[in-house]
Length: 176
Image (cartoon, rainbow, N blue to C red; front, side, top):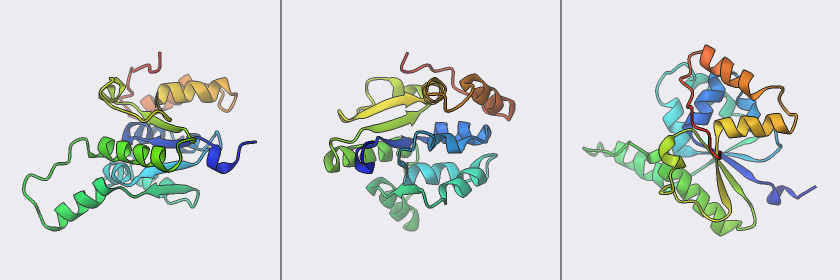
C-alpha cells in the first residue's frame, strides 16, 4: 500500500459538492481512502448562502478527516470584503483558488496526483490549466470510477437521487 503522502489528493469544486449533497452522498468523496482537501474559497461559495445543500456541506466539511486548504485568493476576498471595496470580484474565485491549490500541490509534492472534481463545462475546456500531476474528473466520471471499483452499486442511482432531490445535474461527460 502506498504511503499517505503518495495517495492522490481529491480537490472538489463547488458543483460536485452540491450534487453529492443533493444525493446525500458526500462521503463518496472519501470512498477511495484518499485525502480530501476543500479549498477555502470553494467551501465559502457553497456555504455562504442558505441553500438546500449549504448546511449539509458545512456539517460534512467539519469532520476531522476533511482538510480545508487556505488560499491567497480567499484571503484577498476576505480582505476586500472587510474594507467594503466597491466592485468586488466574486465570479470564478473558487476555480481560481482551486488552481492555486493545485499549483501549491505540484510545487510541494510533485509526486502526488491531484484529482480535481468538477461539473462546470468551462473547466472541461483546455484553458483551465492544470499542473502535470493533476487531473480533471467530472462528478459523473468519479461516480463511474467508484462503481467500476465496486465501491458503489450504481453511479446512475446516485445521479437519479440527486436529480430527484432537485439538482440540475450536468450532462457533461468528461473524460469521455
